[in-house]
Structures are given as structure tokens and as C-alpha cells.
Length: 114
Image: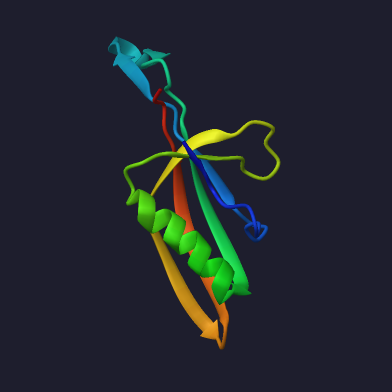
């Protein structure tokens, strides 16, 4: 399995979203019973930005993501976390605000597979 290139770290201000998969049973008089659903019910979604990086670094990131085409997973350890996670990236974009500088934004989704 491939590992995401770590030549340049994302800009601070990354976002991590959680949305546990739950089921709710609604009873009379407003009572509810909630339970988690599935084995991996709380996979994370991360939003990263690499701001004002060199075109070379941006091309390395974009080439890596293009090669996986949103289908093949890869290992990545988000900043502040101790263990790597299996991720996919189905969408990203690259802007070139200055000569030889680029910004990439990407959404990484944690996946549960062998």
C-alpha cells in the first residue's frame, strides 16, 4: 500500500469531521433509543490545505492523488494523531495564485478495508 508523500505538511487549520452511524427507535411520548450501527461506525473525514507551496511539491501531491483516482487507499497520519489511517481522496483542487507557487485543497476519507 502506498503512503502519502510527507515532503510538505498541510497548513494549520485542517478540519476533522465525525458523524457516527447510529440508528434511532422512536417510541410514544417522545422516548428514543439510540445505538451505533456497524463495526466501523465512526470513520473520519479530513479537509486539508497546502497553502503557498512550490509547484514541485504541489505536482508531487497531485500526481500521487491522480494515480489513486479516488479508488485506491493509501496510508496517512494526520497531524496530532499517533497512528496512520487508511484513506481515499475523491476530490481535490489546485490553484496557482503566484508564479511557481500553488495551493492544494483535498478531502481525505478514512476507510475500513483489509
